[in-house]
Length: 46
Image (cartoon, rainbow, N blue to C red; front, top):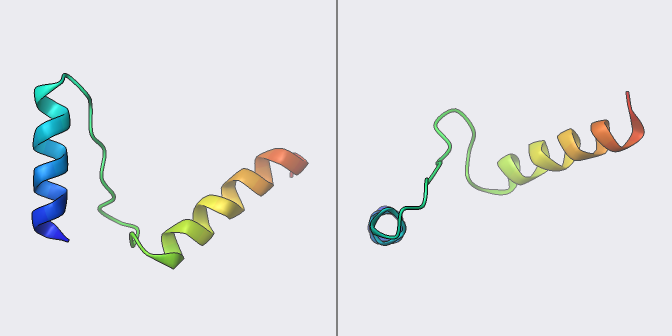
């Protein structure tokens, strides 16, 4: 995963893309679930 991340971020940076990666959240199902909660919260205006 680290090698893939490095290759992808390097390639995108060469094309002037800003790349953001998580540092405090896991990049697995836990991070996805947190994102879904954030979207749901905004959707139902809690």
